Amino acid sequence: MDNLFSNFELPQFFTTTVTSFVLITAAEIGDKSQLVCMTLASRHRAMPVLLGAIAAFGLLNTLAVIFGAAIANWLPNYLVAFAVALLFAGFGLHALLNHADEDDEGELVEKSGHGIFFTTFLMITLAEFGDKTQLAVVAFSSTAAPLAVWVGSTMALSFTSGLGVWAGRTVLQRMPLTWLHKISGMIFLILAAVALFEAYTAVQSVEWWLKLLN
Image 1 (spheres, one colour):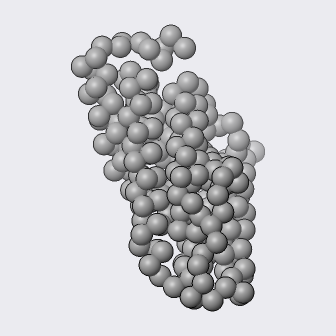
Image 2 (cartoon, rainbow, N blue to C red):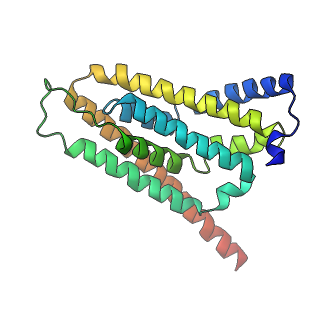
Image 3 (cartoon, helix red, strand yellow):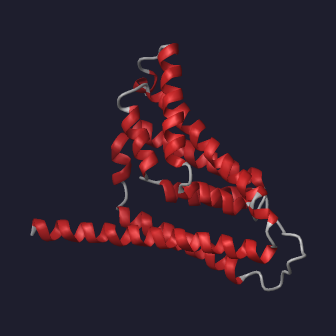
């Protein structure tokens, strides 16, 4: 833990924090975690979604800073990607198939509290585990003050998540309820397809290495 507070000088700390904030924000705009926040916030209360996202990124950044590059090797990439695909597909199908009794004039019944918090936390933790953003935090914290990198990256990811929540509460909620469900469902199914493709390519890579070793 001493390394976490190494090279602590206020000007350098500020510079590193700002740099990591800018870099991670640029990398995360339009990423899948922001789409998750947007779609969940369009159908549920904003605060549990935002807090769940912040908690997930706080955990992921902490693991990245403390354990370094080894974090990406805890689980095989294809297992993580396959779990993400199943989770996204389940939410996508639920959104598409469970709105038959709701009409366009009705108000959206929002779920709140711990359920949405843990749903958001789980989805983002799985989706971002070993992702490019987390690996960027790993790389940056190995060359700069880790605590400053953690603060900057967590602020950046909280900011982008907040933008996603804002978009979900404004842009998407102006749409008719039926279209809202369809768009949410399609976004999750697209994310599921991307994750499934990542799982497939990861498996192919493992098989290629096994053939090479044999």
